[in-house]
Image 1: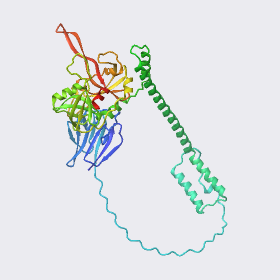
Image 2 (image 1 turned 30 degrees about the horizontal axis):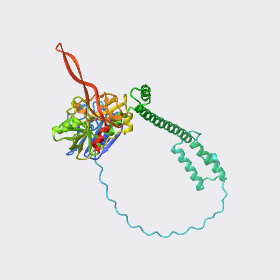
Image 3 (image 1 turned 30 degrees about the vertical axis):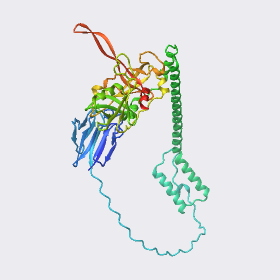
Image 4 (image 1 turned 45 degrees about the vertical axis):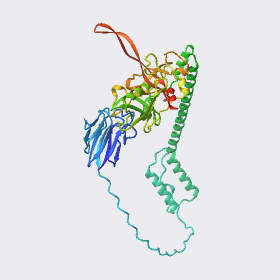
Length: 487
């Protein structure tokens, strides 16, 4: 029996799909067999569930989805047998399907050979035709021809069939017109009347198409012009001294020019997710890394120090269900990184070499783009927060934030070559260390490193106590620090 899936709720409602296979995968990720709408069907996970044929019976199997899988309104624990008419929903209010089992198509019978053709007998020639014109009464047009429809009326198949039938009758001699010009006039009148409405519709559609193309061209022109202005202002801002009074004016203009895109974050995650990795040892994750070369991952130097202490380390691909895993065969930290120096910040970046190749390599910002970044810019991070780490089903978390400032290691403004400390306000935790930091243009500008510690007094059991706690301000290392390790 084959499987027919009828969509009864969600973006695909009203459609159906037929499958002649033993496993059908469903979810929002584009590599599924049944792909739910990425924006509309948000209750469904990227790889939500599978329909499996085992021993002649069908089962629905949940793949560790975020919102669960329901069969006939009841949440299943892991797998559930399917019967014709079973309704399966992906999330309590997500897309819903109905299961139908249909018999497989019977095999086609082989074609039988045709008998040999008999030779044709010659036909006797008919006597010569008498081509002399014969007198015949003329037929009135009103009696022989169907009246033309009024201009602008829609013409159906029956009317067109009658017109063709009349034309054939005239051509075969059953109806005759006195002059060729009279026949041409009748045909022209009918064609003009029948196509008047279609011509007007075509003109209207053509006009709308021209307007849409002009609008699209204007949008492309505005977007290109806006991007050029943004880049020019960024370059101008990078060349100014920190105390220049014109900085505030240029930063305000940049804020007004920055294009908004409601789908930017989602698109960034979808195209980058296979280039993000969870670092794990002995079945437990501890840091994030990302691909900068097919077989080279970037991360923070202190994550590499931790990896060396743990021994055997693997890199688990984001959303790879723990199956896409790569052995780490080499680790290196930046030559200026000093893990024992607790009083200053040193270049906290490193690289790992894996056995195998990443499916995606992230795009790195150019020097010109790094020069232009500054306070207030949008940034985005994708990593594995410590309390959400699951080495059996690694799923990264997307965060949006802003740059607080770009400084030297001392926290003060510095020239470009020394201003590699990028402060941001993303709510990262320990497991997010080593995750990439993207700019608003979708280029990697940094490696997330950690956060500041703040000291203060708090009352504990009625007594003032000096406490140290994590600051909400985090920082990353500018991505070009990694270049020293890639040469």
